Image (cartoon, rainbow, N blue to C red):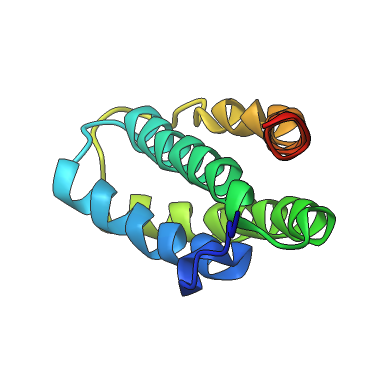
Length: 130
Protein backbone atom coordinates (compact mmCIF):
# COMPACT_ATOMS: atom_id res chain seq x y z
CA UNK A 1 0.00 0.00 0.00
CA UNK A 2 1.49 3.35 -1.04
CA UNK A 3 1.03 6.02 1.65
CA UNK A 4 2.90 8.81 -0.17
CA UNK A 5 1.18 12.11 -0.53
CA UNK A 6 3.00 14.14 -3.18
CA UNK A 7 2.23 17.55 -1.77
CA UNK A 8 4.44 20.23 -0.29
CA UNK A 9 2.01 20.49 2.59
CA UNK A 10 3.21 17.07 3.73
CA UNK A 11 6.49 18.63 4.91
CA UNK A 12 6.45 20.12 8.44
CA UNK A 13 8.30 23.25 7.27
CA UNK A 14 5.59 24.12 4.75
CA UNK A 15 2.85 23.32 7.24
CA UNK A 16 4.41 25.70 9.77
CA UNK A 17 4.82 28.39 7.12
CA UNK A 18 1.22 28.00 5.95
CA UNK A 19 -0.22 28.28 9.45
CA UNK A 20 2.19 31.08 10.33
CA UNK A 21 0.76 33.05 7.40
CA UNK A 22 -2.77 31.98 8.26
CA UNK A 23 -2.58 33.18 11.88
CA UNK A 24 -2.47 36.96 11.24
CA UNK A 25 -5.10 36.63 8.52
CA UNK A 26 -7.51 34.88 10.90
CA UNK A 27 -6.80 37.43 13.63
CA UNK A 28 -7.31 40.38 11.29
CA UNK A 29 -10.55 38.91 9.93
CA UNK A 30 -12.02 38.13 13.36
CA UNK A 31 -11.00 41.50 14.86
CA UNK A 32 -10.75 40.38 18.51
CA UNK A 33 -11.69 43.04 21.07
CA UNK A 34 -9.05 42.15 23.63
CA UNK A 35 -5.47 40.99 23.51
CA UNK A 36 -6.54 37.86 25.38
CA UNK A 37 -8.94 36.92 22.59
CA UNK A 38 -6.26 37.54 19.97
CA UNK A 39 -3.87 35.20 21.79
CA UNK A 40 -6.62 32.60 22.08
CA UNK A 41 -7.33 32.75 18.35
CA UNK A 42 -3.61 32.34 17.64
CA UNK A 43 -3.58 29.33 19.97
CA UNK A 44 -6.56 27.78 18.17
CA UNK A 45 -4.76 28.15 14.84
CA UNK A 46 -1.72 26.52 16.44
CA UNK A 47 -3.86 23.61 17.64
CA UNK A 48 -5.20 23.13 14.10
CA UNK A 49 -1.58 23.17 12.89
CA UNK A 50 -0.72 20.40 15.37
CA UNK A 51 -3.72 18.31 14.30
CA UNK A 52 -2.91 18.69 10.60
CA UNK A 53 0.74 17.95 11.33
CA UNK A 54 -0.12 14.76 13.22
CA UNK A 55 -2.59 13.67 10.53
CA UNK A 56 -0.11 14.10 7.70
CA UNK A 57 2.43 11.96 9.54
CA UNK A 58 0.37 9.03 8.26
CA UNK A 59 1.64 9.72 4.72
CA UNK A 60 5.31 10.15 5.65
CA UNK A 61 7.83 7.66 4.33
CA UNK A 62 10.26 8.36 7.17
CA UNK A 63 8.15 8.85 10.30
CA UNK A 64 10.99 9.43 12.74
CA UNK A 65 12.47 12.22 10.65
CA UNK A 66 8.99 13.72 10.33
CA UNK A 67 8.53 13.38 14.11
CA UNK A 68 11.65 15.35 15.00
CA UNK A 69 11.18 17.92 12.23
CA UNK A 70 7.60 18.45 13.39
CA UNK A 71 8.64 19.17 16.94
CA UNK A 72 11.39 21.51 15.76
CA UNK A 73 9.13 23.45 13.42
CA UNK A 74 6.40 23.67 16.07
CA UNK A 75 8.88 25.28 18.46
CA UNK A 76 10.05 27.59 15.68
CA UNK A 77 6.41 28.44 14.95
CA UNK A 78 5.92 29.43 18.59
CA UNK A 79 9.02 31.63 18.56
CA UNK A 80 7.82 33.45 15.45
CA UNK A 81 4.31 33.85 16.88
CA UNK A 82 5.86 35.35 20.01
CA UNK A 83 7.43 38.00 17.77
CA UNK A 84 4.41 38.45 15.49
CA UNK A 85 1.65 38.78 18.09
CA UNK A 86 2.88 41.98 19.79
CA UNK A 87 3.13 43.60 16.36
CA UNK A 88 -0.42 42.49 15.50
CA UNK A 89 -1.71 43.70 18.85
CA UNK A 90 -0.19 47.13 18.27
CA UNK A 91 -1.83 47.25 14.84
CA UNK A 92 -5.22 46.14 16.17
CA UNK A 93 -5.10 48.23 19.34
CA UNK A 94 -7.58 46.07 21.20
CA UNK A 95 -9.66 47.50 24.02
CA UNK A 96 -8.87 46.83 27.66
CA UNK A 97 -5.72 47.40 29.63
CA UNK A 98 -2.66 45.19 29.52
CA UNK A 99 -3.80 41.63 29.45
CA UNK A 100 -2.51 38.39 30.81
CA UNK A 101 -1.93 37.35 27.19
CA UNK A 102 -3.39 33.89 26.95
CA UNK A 103 -0.14 32.55 25.62
CA UNK A 104 -0.50 29.76 28.16
CA UNK A 105 -2.82 28.12 25.63
CA UNK A 106 0.29 27.29 23.62
CA UNK A 107 1.23 24.74 26.27
CA UNK A 108 -0.71 22.31 24.08
CA UNK A 109 2.70 21.78 22.45
CA UNK A 110 3.38 19.35 25.29
CA UNK A 111 0.90 16.91 23.72
CA UNK A 112 2.31 17.01 20.19
CA UNK A 113 4.85 14.19 20.65
CA UNK A 114 2.10 11.98 22.08
CA UNK A 115 -0.18 12.67 19.10
CA UNK A 116 2.62 12.00 16.63
CA UNK A 117 3.60 8.77 18.37
CA UNK A 118 -0.04 7.68 18.45
CA UNK A 119 -0.31 8.16 14.68
CA UNK A 120 2.93 6.22 14.21
CA UNK A 121 1.64 3.31 16.31
CA UNK A 122 -1.70 3.19 14.51
CA UNK A 123 0.07 3.30 11.14
CA UNK A 124 2.40 0.50 12.24
CA UNK A 125 -0.54 -1.61 13.41
CA UNK A 126 -2.38 -1.01 10.14
CA UNK A 127 0.62 -1.98 8.02
CA UNK A 128 1.53 -5.06 10.09
CA UNK A 129 -1.91 -6.50 10.76
CA UNK A 130 -3.96 -5.50 7.74
